[in-house]
Each structure stands twice: as C-alpha cells, then as structure tokens.
Image 1 (cartoon, rainbow, N blue to C red):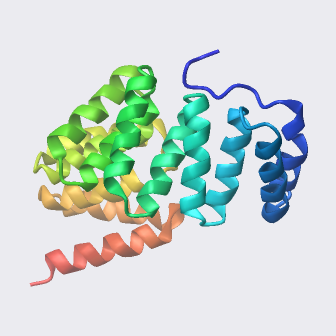
Image 2: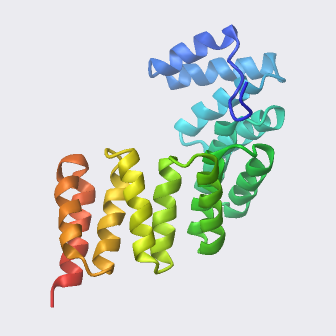
Amino acid sequence: MPQTENPPPPPRHAEGMRRFNAGDREGALAFFADTVRAFPGDAQAHYFHGIVLFRLDRFGEAAAALRRSADLFPGEDALVKLAMAQGQLKDMPACLATLEEGARRLPDSATVRAYLGTTLRSLDRLEEALAAYRAALERDPGHVPALWGLGLALGMAGRHKEGMAALRLAIERDPTFPPPHFHLGVLALADGDPGETRRREALLRNLAPSYADRLAQILTERTTP
C-alpha cells in the first residue's frame, strides 16, 4: 500500500459511511462516536469521526479526532484535514507544525507539501512557500494545486512572467479549475497585458461567474483614470 494512503476501511464502517453519503451527518457522527469507543485503536474510525465533525464545523473536536487518527496511522488526508481544522481555529503555528510533521512522515506526498506551501504563503514566508511548492512538483510535476500555488507565490514575489508560466501549466492540466484562470488574469494585468485579463474574464463568465465579476472589478479599478 502506498505510504500516503489510508488503509481500506473495515466492513464495520459501512453503516456510518452509508449514513454520511445519504446526508445524515448526525447519524454518521453518532455511529462513528460509538465505533471509536468500541475500537479505540482503529485509525480509520477516528478519521471518519473527524471528517464528520469537520463537515459540521466543529473544528476543535474534529482536530482532536483527526490527531488521534494521525497518531495511529499517518494518512495523508487525516494530516491535511487536521491542519485545515487547526487553520479554521486560527491556530497557524499548530497548522504549520502538522504539515511539517506530514512532510517528514510522508516523504513522497506532493499534496502535503502543496498545503505546506499555501500555509507558508499565507504567513508571507514566500521563499519557504516556493521551496515547498517545488518539492511538491518534484514528486508530482502535474500537481494542479502546487502549480497554482507556485504561480500565485511567484506573482506575490513580483516574478510575474514565471508566475504566469506556472499558472498556464495548471490550466493545461485542469482547464475547469477557476483559480489559476483568475490569478493569471491578475498577473497579466500587473505585467501590462490587460488583453489577457479580458480573455480570462470572458472564459470565467461560463466557468465561474463570481471570479469573472471580481476580475472585471480589478480591471476597472486599475485601468480607470
């Protein structure tokens, strides 16, 4: 089994997953709460318990459940969701520490490193963010979130053409993902190419109208005398 994957869930989780997939989150929560009491060493039970709590916006409880899951088994998604819950709690030192832990425990994971880059970028630690994104892309050259994050971080560092190149690679990999289109439009405007910004706005009209509206607003603000 690849290091970054969670082990297959035991059959005893089927009822909880059925409730969750049917939209009965409270029922799923009760099921997995009972399961972790009965099987405290079951990493997947703690993971699903944490995911349901996360979906219910109970981030403190979700973080505790996901921490128990990650302690038992270093599942990629358990560590990422733990970091996300800590971020929702505004505990950025804990979020960063979790992702750094994930990078150590999962040396082949591009996803953990992409999230690490985004966390570092949000803390204005741009050079470290760039290094994390590049480390993700060394492991998976087509990792769209890492390409997007790299392009955005390069743009924040004033390296507009490099940033646009990374964003175009992200778009090539997944043309339906709106954020790289939006940020390519922003960087093109900063680089003196409003025509490219308008092309991205037009494309986003069908793909994600809210992004198109925001891009049009930025274009108006920056080009109106």
